[in-house]
Image (cartoon, rainbow, N blue to C red):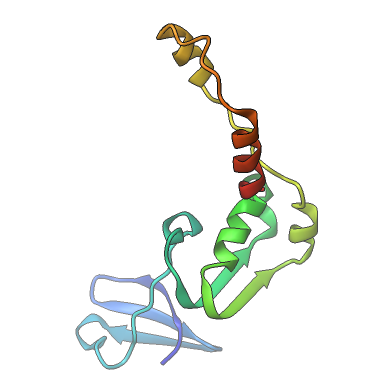
Length: 130
């Protein structure tokens, strides 16, 4: 059976399957329902999955980052399904979070104010994460 557990009571699960509402006793869930799991894009980093479902809710644009979309898309080995408004992708083009770091202050506190970081190295790093 495919469905979503809408809520659970102490002794049963209330499942929505298509247009049906089904009550499944907790003791008989094995063999009736197959468990499935979801993880966040953050947790998926470094992993690959046969199938990936990416949700792009229109009410979550405050946390939308193209870097996260890229990470989600590259996790799929066989099938990628994107659910949501394509406008979110075009609207998010170029959106990035400006990182605020205490590194310069920490280096200064350690007396490392003259530390030199090769700018060509930093450019390479920047280009690889764009």
